[in-house]
Structures are given as C-alpha cells and as structure tokens.
Amino acid sequence: MSDNSTTTVGKPISCKAMVARAAKQPLTQENITVGTPKAGEVRVKVIANALCHTDIYTLDGYDPEGLFPCILGHEAGCVVESVGEGVTSVAPGDHVIPCYTPQCCEWSCIFCQSPKTNLCPKIRSTQGKGVMPDGTSRFTDKDGKPIYHFMGCSTMSEYTVLAEISCAKINKKMALDRACLFGCGVSTGLGAVWNTCKVEVNSSVAVFGLGAVGLAVIQGAKMAGASRIIAVDVNPKKFVAAVALGATDTVDSSKLDKPVQQHIAGTLTEWGVDYSFDCTGNTEVMRAALECSHRGWGTSCVIGVAASGHEISTRPFQLVTGRVWKGSAFGGFKSRRDVPNLVQKSLDGDLPIEHFVTHEFDGVEKTNDAIEALHGGECLRAVVKY
Ligand code: NAD
Ligand code: AHE
Ligand code: ZN
Image (cartoon, rainbow, N blue to C red; front, side, top):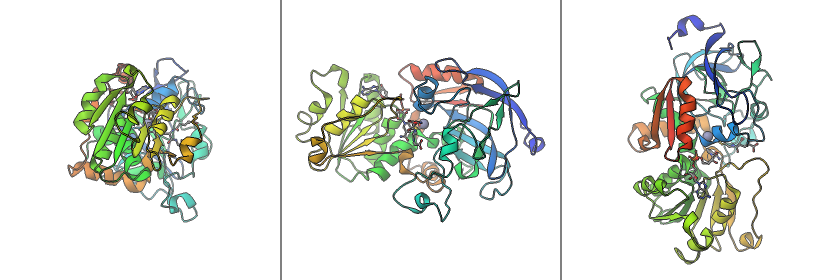
C-alpha cells in the first residue's frame, strides 16, 4: 500500500478491506471507500491487525449483535491519517490502538469518573448497531452501499474511522505489529487478574482455556505472585506455553473420569482455588470454573464470550457458601489511560509479549489465511501486517 497520507486529508479514501458478507462465509476482498472523519472522529491507517476469537465467533454468527455485511477486526496498531472537527487528543502521525471499550473522560460520565469500572457507555449503543455515533457508516462498497462497523474498530481494512474516545495514543517506539496485541486479548487477560480480581501474592489460580487470553491470565497471575497456577485445556498442545509462562499444573479436562471441578477441588487442592478464570466462552466450563473455586472466598471470573442464547447456571448453594461470580470486559482497563502504560511496560522490558505471536501474514488480503491458522489449534495470535 502506498503512503498517500498527505493527499488524502479531507477526501474519501479508496482502499482494500476484507468484508464479512454473511455468517460462516469466508471474508471477501473488496475495494471500499472510507469516508472522511466527522466531528469527534479520527481516520487511521491500519498497520497491523491480530485476530481475536471474538472476530471468529461473530463471523460464525454467534454474536446476538452481529450484523452483515460488516468489517470485523478489533486488535490493531494504527497511524492517524486525519482528524475530524474538534479532535484534540490525537493528531495526524500519532500511533494509536483502537479500543472497543472507549473512555470519554467527561465529568458527567459516572462510569469514567468511577474507579470501579472501565465500561464507558458513551457510544455503546451505536457501536452495537454497527454505526458511528451519528448513526451512519463511514464505509461504502463499490455499489455505494453502506457496510457496518464492528466493535467501534473495524480494523480488517487498510483504513478505518474511529471515535476519538476510542483512540489510545501510544509511544511511537513500540512496533505496531506488536502493539496491536494490547487492543484486546493480552490486555484482557492481564487486567482480569490485576484489576477485576486483584489476585494477591501466594494465591492459587485455575485458568480454563489456554488461548492468548488464558495465557495472559497465567502471565498476569505469575507477575502478581500466585504460587499455584492450574492450567486447563482440552488441547494438550497448549500446555507447553502455559508452563513456560508459570503454570504449575496442567489438566486435560477431556481425559478426566470425573468433572474437572471435582478434580481441582478435591484432588489437586482440598477446598478449591482462590481465583478461577473462564477463557473459553463455554457455559459448562464457566460453571466448572465457579464450582472449583474455594469454599468461603473463591472468586471466579467470566472472560469468555458465550454464543447467543447460552446461559450460565449453578446451584445457588455455591454462592451461599461464599463463592463469588464476576465478569471482566477488556480486563477492567480504562482504555485511553491504561493502554499506553501497558505499551510502555512492554517497551521497558517488564511485560514480554512476543510469545503470543505464533503466525504472521503480509497484506490485509491474507486475513482468511490467518483465520484458517486460528482454527488450526496451535495459533495464539496471527498478526496480519497490511
Ligand atoms: P482461543 O480460541 O484462542 O482460545 C480458547 C482456548 O479454550 C483454546 O485453547 C481451546 O482449546 C480451549 N477450550 C475450548 N473448549 C474448552 C473446554 N471445554 N475446556 C477447556 N478449554 C477449552 O480464544 P481467545 O482469543 O484466547 O479468547 C478466549 C475467550 O475470551 C473467547 O470466548 C473470546 O471471545 C473471549 N474474549 C473476551 C474478552 C473480554 O473482554 N471479556 C476479550 C477477548 C476475548
Ligand atoms: N455482543 C455480544 C457480547 C460480546 C462481548 O461480550 N464482548 C466483550 C468483548 S470480546 C472482545 O474480544 C465485551 O467486552 N463486552 C462488553 C461490551 O460492552 O460489549 C452480546 O452478547 O451481545
Ligand atoms: Zn477480542
């Protein structure tokens, strides 16, 4: 792709994008038009995008909010191309990570002002409808028909438009094909441990699902000083990375002759673990995670995203006897404030992330190959450089 940033300001941009036309169909490579950023919006050139399981879940038609045709993708590293009226926090040339959980920082936003949550709702309703805050799309196909946005990011396109409040400005020293990881999975796993559960030194932890999110949970738990980290998956190939990051025990739950919660609370430990995390999106696993947590004080955190129509259940007795069921979105990080700090921590050598990148591709048109790699069972993050 040629760098035409000096000539594009104020004009629509024609570029390549991978469009999700319908559920369970491969993405189609299309030339689309990306409109100019309106007030409070930022147009960015996407440099690299990593695939998250949530993109595939949506492409497979499991997201109740899923809309087609849309441009998926929400884990990216980008350079600002131009900004709309009133944008002051970023400027052309800045490096940004799009954040599907925005942070408006307004005094009137009780969510942004509260230390208890990162869930700024300022643009959540339009984001869920696949449009920008003014209710329209910035993407049109070759016939002039609109294409929906996704999670306020839509980074499977060479250019995209974001709300200013979704842009985390980061240190330019960080390579964007690694910075992208902080746009979702890695930040989510770390933050679920540090912010949502506040895991303490010497805690015991069980992690269900060892994709990038589960491995980031293990990495975060180790950094928090957990002394026992039980890694659970149905794919034993995932155990190598889990142990390298600090898992003390591995469990292939598909090979047990009893429910995994009874194996963890009963065999591996007497009363269960202090903290457990679901990183699968499977509601039976969420139940097992809750039920393997410690009588009296165990906390279980749902991170995985369940398919439309699936619900969680357990005996209320599990809660009566002291277990707490929690959930975490984007690891509880206030995006524009915290993502730049995660990037800096990584630049300082205190937060290694290289191990998450198992596959790399060149060109947005290779995104279907990246999806195939993700289905292969050995992929953590496939990074596509545009
Ligand atoms: P992934 O597909 O790479 O990893 C999932 C792992 O779970 C795989 O290793 C798989 O083998 C394992 N698994 C599947 N079934 C299992 C079972 N029954 N028991 C144990 N392990 C099982 O996915 P990912 O990108 O790491 O994402 C994990 C989940 O987190 C997904 O549901 C994703 O949508 C969700 N997610 C949530 C947030 C959030 O903010 N809450 C952010 C990112 C991702
Ligand atoms: N749209 C779905 C829910 C999808 C969902 O829960 N998304 C997670 C992020 S997954 C990132 O890979 C999340 O943070 N949700 C909070 C939010 O505001 O969307 C549904 O069930 O409707
Ligand atoms: Zn994600």
